[in-house]
Length: 294
Image 1: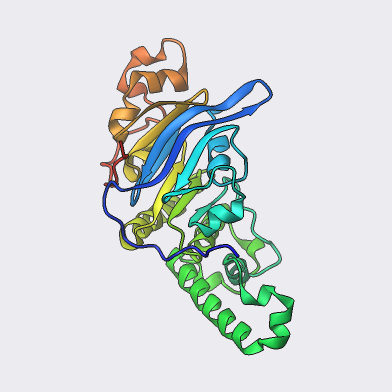
Image 2 (image 1 turned 180 degrees about the vertical axis):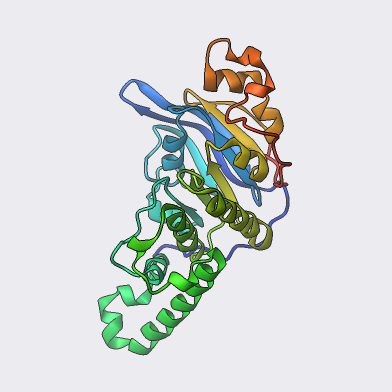
């Protein structure tokens, strides 16, 4: 029987939560992830950026157990989970969202969140006959937790509505509520800002920051919106061609000529910081205080 994820505790700064060492994932002769090594600090909101095809989503799939690495190690909170099934990563406290959320459209918003916790007693047919009181009590607790997180993300009023009525941005908020109901230690967010209107994007960013600040939840965030990265994430990792190109504070990384060249190619790096990927305006001051473990 797999060990359930423990409640998140506000962590000590700079303590390593996840370690990836020489991770490799190849498709045919192409290495989508090519010997990648990095650590994630507990309590940090870490950004992961890079041009299309850099290997970011493949890395996410390896970190979450959806793909088995061809080489290297993945250690979460001191536990070697290399090649383990997604259920073991989830049980160890890792959850993820997807770039395009796909809730169960016919189920209510509330029911979508209530489905998330694993190992519920009511999933065992015999329990409904032999322990109906325990099943009902657990379902009440799950409902209360689901409503708490729906209220947190601002979707409580839509709890009884079918999930198909939600906008794209609201579906991303629903995904955030779904992962948080299981109280993960680390959440992998795949482009939370993609296709979201500015008002909802601001709300999503505020909720991520609040979860980090108030609950100690750590995040690894793939994102192409560089203003979002600069305002929310610290440190920032940059991938290119399956490798780690550089890492550091967001303003330093986004002004790095190698990063500009990776995004724009050719002699674009000569344009300097003004040509940094996604640059449209003066960047907000980074709010994250997590540091990448050495």
